[in-house]
Image (cartoon, rainbow over all chains, first blue to last red; front, side, top):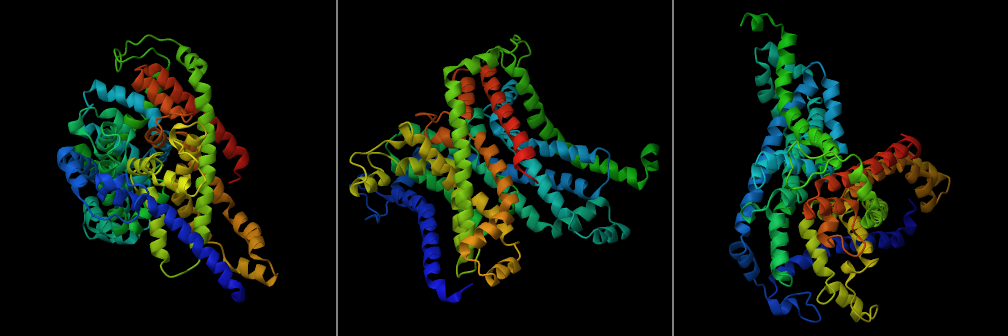
Length: 278
Length: 297
């Protein structure tokens, strides 16, 4: 690099980074301050970029009068259960694929990866028909099952790739010492694979938390709504109450951003593996 | 019992492996592969709310496909889908490329900036869609105010409900929301480019533009080609973003939204399935050609 010329180049680079930051962050900033402006300040002209007061009334109203406590509970239930079940099933499946020999392994792996090809919109009609037939409409567990089907292939793939990096000699030493396969898995392989498990668990949680289309089609009873559906319903019933809509948006977004900031390193792996399919 | 005892280690392990994979296989087969096939069946039958999930729906051959193809909305939806997915993919990749080049060199706070760059991608689509709607509100939105007070607009425009503008916004949303995915993939590749290439170019006196076009871009060729395939595939099938932003109004009714409307608005599931099959087939044909001719893996 020619050092003498850098200042000008640096100015361009840093102002470009600054521009990116503004374009990314401003909408989030606007969401937060809009949720805390009073109703009259919300529609002030010109708009206030620094609100005069911090008003939490919208949050109270959204949580306790518009049912968001319940939607939060439903969303946590769905996301936590999806992540946990996904992790258990994917660990077992991935271990078998990475370490055990069995007939039809390659075929099974290929057919599971084929799932990548089938988007939600293609499956939504038959899934609706199937769930309706067994009475799983308005059933959060039915929703969890469909989320599992969508997320398991990527989890399996990510975990199997990681399990292969665990030195086989350590596992064999365990077997020679008289451990059963299950003990080897729970005492050796899994403790060594915590980072990969964290990635899978977090990205699955995020998908289940953010998912919209399946929830829209499978849930009708507002008592069963997850957060995204609750937000759409709120918007449809109060077209102009942007303070409420923004407060609800903050409530949906904050857990994900916190999770992301706390576990960025792990989450990125899931993002690159295309786990979000978005 | 005796049989179990005589299994050797290899057989026991194989049996264990089956137990491990069976739950995943059953779920994925039952809720992805079976419904994908069932969707084909529905598309050839007259399926309404009354006979949904029953076996007795009358077979109608290609009638659903013909009705979809002849529907006045189909041609527009196909055009909108193609414009949306091509331009949206290109924009998100271009922005991702720019962002990754900016973050490729070390500076103080790079880790934090990189984290913030991912915000729009990890945040729930519902909340960011509603934020955009609020920002773009023609009467009280801050963007409308900025454009009016700077004199660019003489009167407010409801961008999400006007033809042309609406498509522009949903494409912009694609770029804003999904560039981080491209950024992560490109960044990983950029960091693998050997520095010697740039040093050699420096010795030859190449400037930054030349280095970009003769070293960086060729080195990124594969990752850009793959990214385009992935982004196009996902955008082509994308429902949430447009449904939330415009509900398919003002020329943004893409095929996924049309699929949803046929099946869950009109309760004509056969028609909806046929629309989604069109989506699948068109995308499949394009991908085969793309992988075969454009992408030299």
